[in-house]
Length: 350
Image (cartoon, rainbow, N blue to C red; front, side):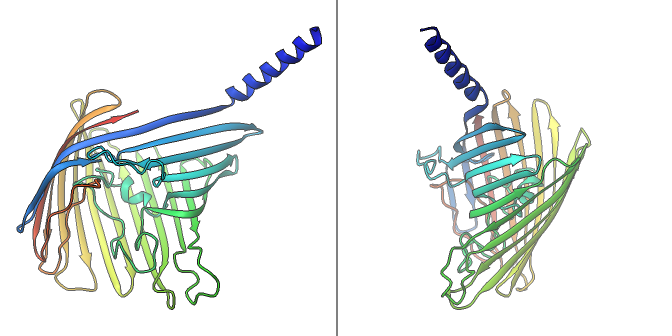
């Protein structure tokens, strides 16, 4: 009897030890705003989801394997507060399993492209809502033969390696499979590679991003290449940032030059951004965008915010504004139109 009690006690203790070495977290963002976008042709007004941060629901967890090794998982899906639709069970934002240690981290699955991370990191609006720079897929968001455009935010079927902590240096490399049969002439269609290397220490953060996506029809391939470099420096009373991004492919080239800043103001933050888009393959097709916004923190997890943005297009350009919503459409935009938009909303994280 005593042996049985000892065995049960030992099993209970072991189970408790395993339970303490692992964790699972439910997390999310709910963000909704009243938004309006207008051009010379018409305007659209309605409720948007994700004006400050994309709305989402996710689960993540880690397990301590001992010897400095950790296993991890991350499942995250987008959702739309405005109409209640959800892709949360598709986990389209991130779906990864990973192994990490002193060597760094190996991460498998769907994740953000390292080349895209600078686009949001060095934008005061985090590439979200009407104020976001819209710096992904500059050449073509529906580039033929690519999974998600000429320089997408995310890649599926990816193998990622992240550097371990090395002072202020950080980096990530990604290879994603297009998974096409070997007897297809363009058998690398949909494959992508991306790299990010940076340094962050004290007030300074600077990083370089590179990406390549293979597109084109099944019979003949087209390479879409992206390069970006960004930097920020926190001066305390203001954090200026700068971004340069360029994309090439299918005889097109688009450059983006962005300037921005965040300023602590009262119980919140002022955000200002200027972005200049230049088409190198077409004359009179440049665009300029200015955005200003303010977020007031009600708590560490809740914020009310407002943003105003305007895009000025040259005669052969028709760039618009974007909102993170599945139901609020953009207005009709003709070549040379100017587009104005605003959002007033509330964000809560958990």
